Image (cartoon, rainbow, N blue to C red; front, side):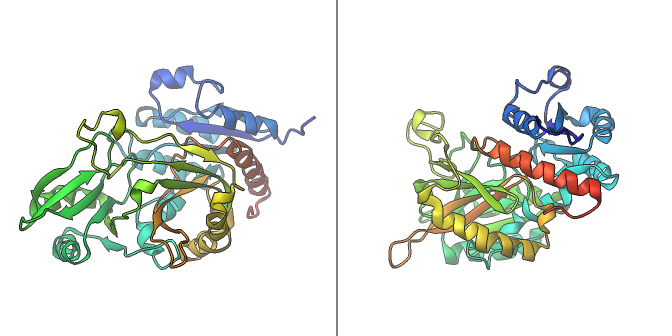
Length: 355
């Protein structure tokens, strides 16, 4: 018989009024998390969210001990500004929130690529905070360093991520490819493309600039983290930033491969796990000033393969960290979420930091 700790937690995801009215614990991609939380004695309820009924969700969350949030940075063209303000408010009143919006702004944005570029996962990364620096510095960098990848600070689904390279034999012309599914390459004057990107500086935004990784066709490794420990891996052959075949962006050859899930002890990712747990995550926490008790109960780091070493070993380049809405995930992840949630709630109820 499981002891009942008496905690009540909401699981939040995006949806309209009908989705909120009809939400259940079983007909959702988070059904495994509901089950895992119940297995450790935590009472749960759906908390479907949209800006239109944010006040109603606020009232609901205030009756709970905690809330686990799965909401993308951009949903139907809207950002998380209203939601994040609400989550900050409930957290200030004693509700445990994972992940807290302030932690997301530290590690779940593209700026983290620049702030941690000196770690072993970093590369030649640059940051543009305003239009003027972008217009004056990026063209020279593009000419000197070859193809680059530009990323807006907050986004998902490839929104605001571009591969940019000079067009052969054309002065001030570039070929650009958006990372969103269904995109095709486009040739246009560089000044016109720079103007297109100006929107990414709105509301204090910025642009991150990294070199294009030639081994992109070798696939992407998603390292799932439960706080500071690896909880599993996902490997996928991706098609973002790879020009579609002649058959077009909707053809079978232009679609990404399935994400193949692996447990945390998968031997092919042992070196990456060791680096994440013993080096890169602790270093990131120090750089970003994030305590162990504030780390998300679930986040992931997406890696591309970097240049091989002289002995033929793989290296890894961080291309983004996802915190806002990590889904899908390996089968063992819900149990880790439940374990951490219970620990955090117990610590919160006793007024001491959770480890």
